[in-house]
Length: 345
Ligand code: NAI
Image (cartoon, rainbow, N blue to C red; front, top):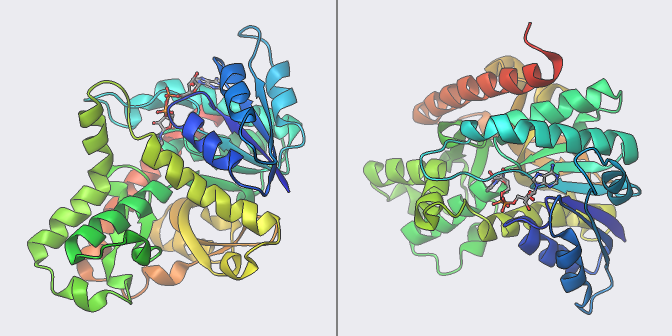
């Protein structure tokens, strides 16, 4: 049984994500932290007849750090979807100024109150907020690269759904894990490696080049479809809650000793600090970046045991170009995030 915290629990992602976590019988306690309405969300979810005990926490004032401390104490998994979402015309980078400080303060709380927890960052721009989290944890002397994930699962979910449409697969679930998504988590830093699809390679090969190009663009910029359709009311929340839960569920299962078979194989990709994880160092050297999204294999404590660098081998020349673009974009965001904590050099 695992105690899980959601920071930003009353938001568009936080609420449905907390609902999904409440439905998981492996969750013993759910700590819902938000600066607004966490008590309401907690009271509502607490009436659902599943084992997880649900508690809401909110700071009494801007300087109150006690509520965060109480929320995080004893947590083994911390999921962070706190911050502002994109509005039409905004890029994920526009979010940086607001979300950088939010993520930093929440991760400082993790460092103090549950330094051994597995931390999953959803708040955008993930390419920069994860380096912020890493630097903040380093500052407190508790950084474990294996326990820090940028959640990029929504890119995989979209890649599977959109590919299912193209090849006429009625149930996109059959494509789960079929498209390795690597790189980062914004626009052209997202790289779907279709050449790595084994089970559906023949169907993919039949698709015209133009269709494949449009597909890659749709996976990279699929978030814009939601931002535009919501017309000022935010970005993806429900699909993101599903995606965030899909990744968190793997960690919870690994920690609970359930479905060990699955946790022993490479799972969805996540954005991680490469030099600290087996298989990552060489990717870091080849692409000149310290962070990249790659499929991860989870250890039994829910941490990253290794990353699957083999997906980057034998890619097509077009994919190689996309990877170069992604690495350049990721590199810039990493500098931005790192400098936010350590100061520009
Ligand atoms: P939202 O505005 O609906 O919810 C954010 C929540 O965070 C609010 O309830 C707010 O009160 C809370 N919050 C703000 N400052 C806080 C603090 N200091 N401590 C605790 N809680 C705080 O936003 P939404 O739609 O839920 O998005 C949240 C974040 O997730 C955004 O940064 C968004 O860009 C990102 N996102 C990430 C995706 C991914 O694939 N990783 C996909 C979609 C969105």
